[in-house]
Image (cartoon, rainbow, N blue to C red):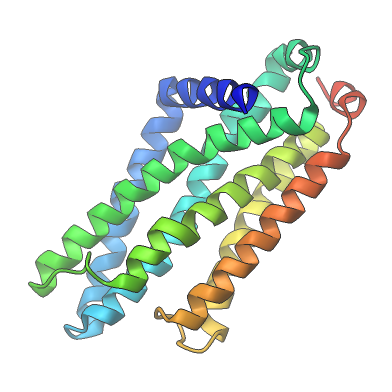
Length: 233
């Protein structure tokens, strides 16, 4: 656990020092929810539960996309500059290295998602004149469901970036990130409760998020150090 903590803290420090990633994530975290929540609040007709469902629908793709932004700096950067070779020589398993990096990506991505959710909730509450933050299913969504999806997205994208070459990653990265977003949006449409928020929907999202996390861990487990070295440009 100490090794995992050291790797995760290192990646978090590097992520929080990356100005370009922070600026991009801040713009997305503030601009997108404000624009979206205006339409949601007007269309909901003063229904706080419907607005909470809309905010939940916004925060999940935002969180996943945040994970994608920070993944590029964590995994691809080290392949571009060659420092991944030094890390592979360290007395730590590749899976533990992947776990630490995935956590190091997920934490700043989750913090940015919370900022996005806070902006959206504040804007919606101001429009409706009622508090949205006390909706229990919205709190469950933000505290439990979204972190699982962020970690799954970071882990799956990170594992792919370790295993594939730079050109393949440029294509696969967009496929994975939009696949996550369309999957989340599709589940919110087909599960009972529609695009709103319900216990059933949260249970399904939680189960799918855990399944994706297990898949990511499996893929990371079958990637070898030799495979990574062969993909370094």
